Length: 73
Image 1: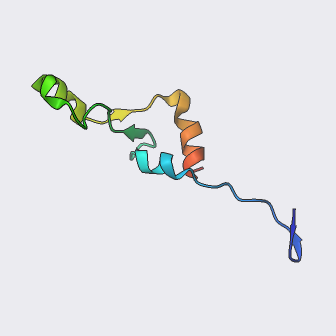
Image 2 (image 1 turned 135 degrees about the horizontal axis):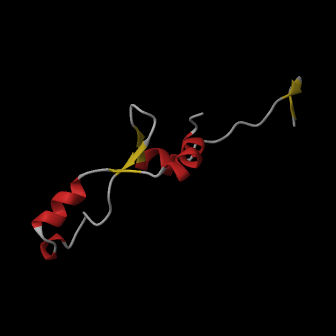
Image 3 (image 1 turned 90 degrees about the vertical axis):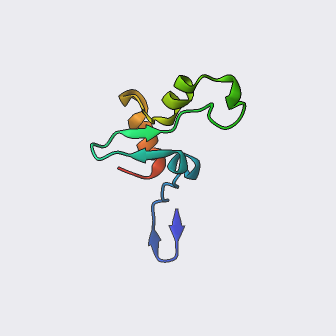
């Protein structure tokens, strides 16, 4: 592609939805919040609701793909 005076490679766009849903930990892993914590909570036990508060680490098999979508590395 030619823009202006020379050839310029197109930039990779950040996937904003992935960036909002995931956080990078200090060791470079990805952390996300668990689902099923928005409504209809009266039918769930206290133990289940407590367990849903904790985040979850994504598996290494998809971490690289999501980091690329976030614009990191």
